[in-house]
Length: 181
Length: 112
Image (cartoon, rainbow over all chains, first blue to last red; front, side):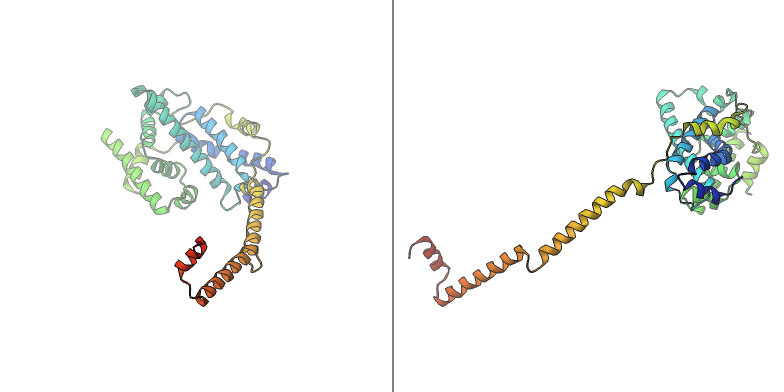
């Protein structure tokens, strides 16, 4: 694992930046993939979004001045790409059909790369129904155990607002399952 | 940890229910690097540099022109001074001959 400071220095030098970028991809791609996958759910979509996120990062490398951790900067790009993808997908699905079979839980249960049971699929559906900020903060806190201060830097939202969003998200999900118990 | 969060963790756990095709992460870096453009896009300051030079030139030209036009020797200023002098002279003459505006109009119309 190469230190962020060294990587940032190499990324700012045109002679070493491509090699440094490759090292950065090797270091952080798996972590970013899982962050994206929890948003978009399918492997193929997660792969596409991840590739786009790295292309955006490469194109924006000149505007990164090392004022945050590399992973924070990359996560911000990855989450924005994921949310953009979901907005586009939502428009397509809303326009095409209201089919019950297209529910998130049913789609996941038919997915070869989903190992969970019915309850876990329903949890993903409950998360998918949350508004964007609640969904984002829930995923980053619940699965990645990320600190509010880091999420705040990543999303540009105050810690207070994030805590409130997380509490509301947790409440909604627990109520969803309590009503099914 | 709040009660609801505890309830979700106990009821549903937080294990990752997703998986990836075998060997996916082994080839991911190469796949990403293959799709990258050769050069990253230049920073916004670098891209805007020609426009910044053009704007600086324009400001310099406007500044110089303003200074020139505001100076006492500027042609516009001299014309104004001359007009003022002529107006004062006509008023003095009119006072001397005790002519009012009607007399001046009649004179101009050729009635005198």
